[in-house]
Structure formats: C-alpha cells, structure tokens
Image 1 (spheres, rainbow, N blue to C red):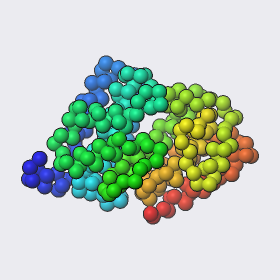
Image 2 (tube, rainbow, N blue to C red; image 1 turned 30 degrees about the vertical axis):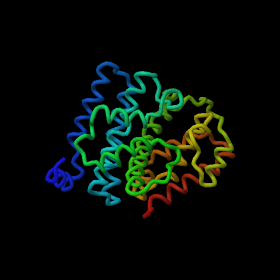
Image 3 (cartoon, rainbow, N blue to C red; image 1 turned 90 degrees about the vertical axis):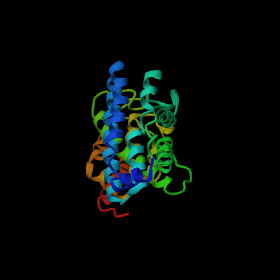
Image 4 (cartoon, rainbow, N blue to C red; image 1 turned 180 degrees about the horizontal axis):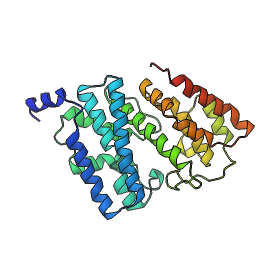
Length: 269
C-alpha cells in the first residue's frame, strides 16, 4: 500500500465496503454448495457482529488504523466456521478444530487483508485468532483493545441468537453445545460461581439452564461500557433468564443478574 492509499484509508477508516463484498462472495460460495440453515445463521451473525463493532468503536472513539482493524476482525472473525461446519458438521471446537485459528487460515489463504497496512493485518489476525478464548492472554496495545471489540460484539449477538433459540421448545442441538435439555435441572455450583462475579466456561455446562446462567454472567465479561449498555438495553438476557425454572434456589442468582443488568444501563466505564 502506498502512502497516498494509506492516507486515504485513514481519512475514511471505517469504509470497509470492499471487504464486505469479499466476505459475501466467500459465504455465498459455501452456501451455494451447502445451503444449510446453520451456515446462513453464521452469515447473518457476521453482519450483526460487524454492526455492534461499529457502534462500539464509535462510542469508545476507537478510530484510525486501530478502528479499521477492529471492524475487519469483526467481519472476518467467524470465517473459520464455514470450513469447520462443512468438514465436521458441527460448530463445536472441542469436536473439530479451533474456529479462531481456522479463521486466520481462511483470511490468509483468501488474501482478504493483503492490501491493508501491516499493523492492521497483524492486529486483525490476532483478534480473529483470540476472539473465542475463555480468557485472553496479556496483550500489548492496541492488540487488547481491538480483540475486546470483537469479543464484546460477538457476545452481544450470541445473546440475541440464544434468546431466540432458547425460547423454542427444543433448541437447535448444535447451538446449545450438546447440553442436556432437562427443564428443571441446573448445576448449583455454577450458579454459586456466578453469584461471586465469576464467568463459567463451556466445559462446566451440563444442562440448558446452566447455559442460561452462563449467558447471564456475560454481562461481567463485556469489556466496554458501551457494550454493557447495549446488552442491558437489548432485553435479550432478561428473555434468557426468564426461562429458568421458578425454583427458590435459583432466585438469588436470577435476582443478582437482573440487578447487574439494571446497573449496566447507566454504566459509564
């Protein structure tokens, strides 16, 4: 990239229209051959995550090369899901391969970022590789900020997807991570962990209600104040938590999470 081209890019850093075209061509190629609903879900999810990333970068004033890398990482963060599903017929990384790493491979193979400045490529690829980690390693800036944008944007849309799927009588099996659909069952140790401000991992889930509690705990795991406000204002976590059984033992964790959501509406950082 010439200095003139880079200057133009920085003037309009959030214009990634050509990249949206690259992604659409990539996704459509898979959907023509494998028109399953799960892959259509991932295409829709990608554009929702990009929209959330735009909101976060605007409200948190993340601009220039850093802002551009965040948007590009959001757009390409789940490209690994397409070959993953075609090869293994699952979105479970534990039963296939880490889709973050698969995404890095796809982006490099397709040369999606070949015309971007080297720092933008490095920052975006790091965020794609790490967006699905349970915990992030220590990252220098701006790697950390860019990765947090993608992680927050991703979680915000997963909340939407799960609010829809968990409202159905039998949630889509692959979406709920193969947990047991026992409407009156939950893991009390997991609920207790959330009550102390913890965020469980996927490996701790046994029941659909555990998954509901995990999603509620994500309000703690959102990095940016703007993302927390968006989460609280969306109402999706309330929908998820309403599905918990009316058991007295679940009352404390449900009230706790609803109070945290209420406080997040006025979160300023």
